[in-house]
Image 1 (cartoon, rainbow, N blue to C red):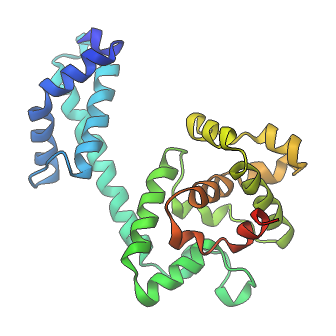
Image 2 (image 1 turned 120 degrees about the vertical axis):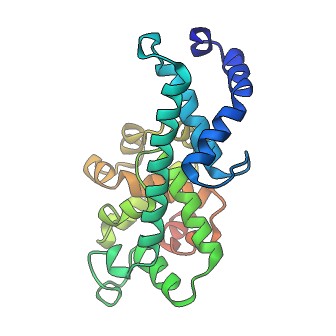
Image 3 (image 1 turned 135 degrees about the vertical axis):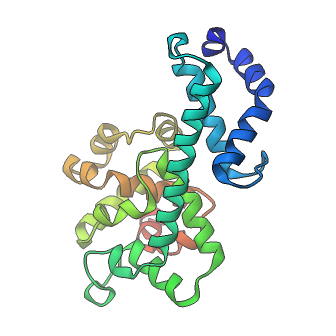
Length: 232
């Protein structure tokens, strides 16, 4: 068991050996039959791997410890899903400090929410859910963007410039995804954008870079001012 902490091959062997147990625990918590194609499996697998890394023999049986972590992770996952479903149906005001009419450039959240309320496109919902999963790796969600989206025109231009810089630097973009940290010093030095703006709108810049460099055509439509910067 201890060897699996440091040996990826042994960890994979342990997971393969414990697959039936992990699926059983996941099905019990989920209250439905779970297969490896379900999202719950991925959540449980992450929890199991965490259990291997954190297990201490003094805590008792390993599988009992793993079951606790699997249950906790799944409960958090289900809660996040409920939050997603609740917020995605909320009014545009949830995502923006002002109404759509008050701003010449509505926030991404307000614009997307307004479209969802009118026609509820499934593709856009899937994009938001997929994007939220990516953003979670950076420590925030799609719905956190309301507090860090640029409002003033000058600030939007600076954020667009920062995003454009990232998208034009594949190595830097790769490092962002690897480290999960915005390379603020490099961006500040190269683009001369004030660090204060980069710090305050870090989440938005990361989100925009991920959306425009990923498979999110629906969400990308709402970032025309960044596309404009890219075309220059």
